[in-house]
Length: 303
Image (tube, rainbow, N blue to C red; front, side, top):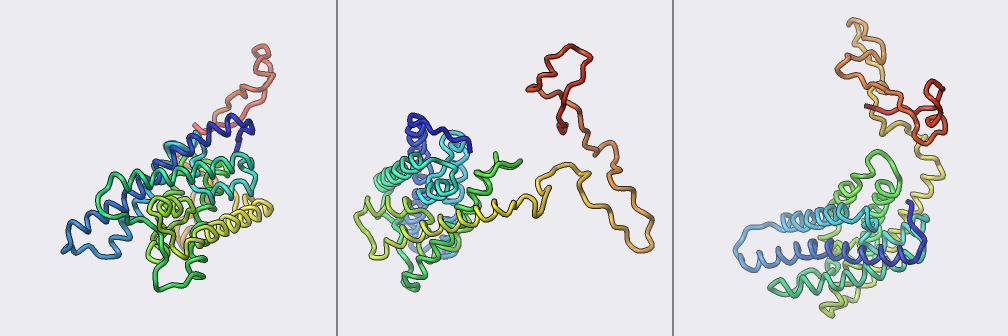
């Protein structure tokens, strides 16, 4: 990532990270509170518990998708202190920016929880508390794994640059949705220390197991960073190369069935489906400024 080290840019990015965190958490915490309002208004409703979890999980995933797509070109759209830690560990952001982001995310979480609590009727329903059926160790490792999955999605889809990087918010949002489906019934589905801390501050209710939402996600960030570093040092792009190539000529040869007519030679495509390569001059080359008729370097572009 081409992050600027200038402190003015760091403070400016942190300001937008605060706004983005508020957008993400107001939408997601608002989803939880809206469900509580609906259930309180319809005590005889047949909405199943699994439907409740699906509703909230979708709310969190879509909220992250929307907020990330709005802000990922501004601040990187982390919205999560644990993601900030992961990016700092792999060198994608500077330590100063990581600290500023974490502060912005924590304050944004408090403000978001206060806004939702003030706007929505009924008692606050978005505190994160482990299910009575699991112990603290189980809650700790569940939070560790789901946060690791989310951090790794950010590292591979957003930090690593490839053809689908502009669509990283979609993949990251879907990842959070999947993580919430597993973790909400068991731990409340924080997957984010700020998401647990903000509501606890606003309500003044710190569960005895609140430390789980600090240690678990932090361990998850470290785990994701370790896997990412191992993948980079293993030159992962050489293990299964050309996975994001869009040229159909890179497809495998057709394998005919026994007794059938021979297939057409590889790379023989109808004109309608042929990917044409056009030689386009390199605008950065010195030769392009030479007089017409001289040779110059060029690069292939798919058109």
